[in-house]
Length: 84
Image: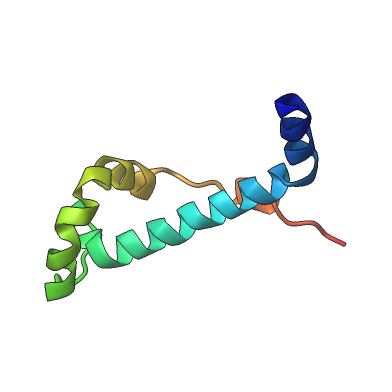
């Protein structure tokens, strides 16, 4: 029964799940860069609120640093758009 459920999930919802997870990662990265960009080298003013949120975001700082400095290629983004 579980195999059938996993098959139907993959058939019907896997693409939607992946797109939603990707969008969630992008929005979270954008928020983290805007709030904590000065800690990874992007010059923003440090605010009181970013310092208050620092203890909650500290465990994911290594991931934020890797994603913020990763080189993005325009052709990777073009593959996501359909020319219909």
